[in-house]
Amino acid sequence: MNIKRLLALILLPLYLASPNAIAHPKTDIVTLYNGDRLTGEIKQLEGGILKLSTDSMGTVNIEWQEIASIDSEFFYEFQLSSGVRHFGSVDDSTRPGQLIVAELGDKKDLEWLKVVRIRPIASNIIDRIDAYFSAGYSYTRANSLTQTSVKANIAYEDEKSRSRLDARSNLTDSDDEASSSSKVDIDRAVWTRREGVFRSFQGNYEQNDELDLNYRLGVGAGFGRHFLDTYRNRLVGVAGLQVITEDNKSEGTDQNLELYLTSRYEAWRFNTPELHLDFSLNLYPSITESGRVRSSSDLSLRWEIVEDFFYDISAYGTYDNRAEGDSGVDYGVTTGLGYDF
Image (cartoon, rainbow, N blue to C red; front, top):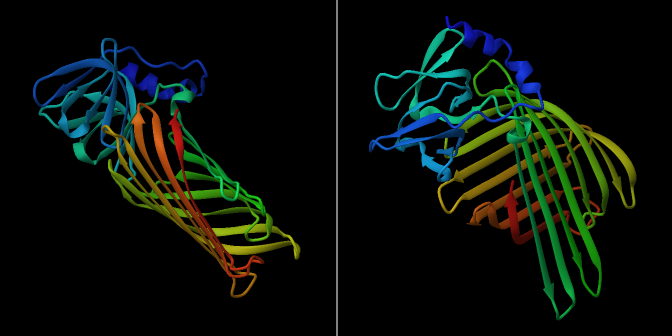
């Protein structure tokens, strides 16, 4: 076994924890099926697009199926559509479209199109954060109606887990009345040894004038599974229990235990124009309050206008059959502009 490779993997956790970890030199070689060779720094593979940073052309986006081979002396995380992760370096291949990963002395022959993500594990922490912010505003003169919306999505992934924060706030103001709603969801998926299965931890906050809800706080845990995870899309399901604390305008504060069932579907197109679809559906049957059922859903669709700037369409819906509002239903659709960091 290569001693340098073994030492590098042994010291890897310390290196990853270092705030001074930096990107590696632009010496990686990507060879296409048409014979073209590009030299640069492999930034990531996501959504079927390999991002290669070059000195002369900036960052180049290359479709994964157009690549015959990659050559690099650095270490990466390779994720398969099954959820399995490998950590190692790229070894010499014997034919185009073959990816061999050297991992602690063992060589893994990975099926090319089942590799859905590649990330340099020598990147600094900032490179692992994916953040998206959007805002929208509209005004109707007839009744002086204004609608303002703000949304944020922040994700961080490492070798053991993926953490995500989703937040939105909507404010409606007119001559007659003003109302607002806001929601913050935090979830963390911790990988297990079983393929596609992870432990789930979540926390959430919600406020909604239409449902006469001053606030709702929830904390829970459960298990999740990747039913689909490819370079084009991802489908995840989670089941667990959570404790909620609610404060309603007339009934005061109360606590309940409820089951939560969550599904989330995401689809990407990373070639120009970039497109991202994100849809989540949540169901909360109460355990301590018989007959009560809550649900919520969020939809986000964004198109890239110019690099990293997006036109954003968002929709949400909330239902509670025991809500104090008129119907227990609130929904909204907003448009705006967003920026991907």
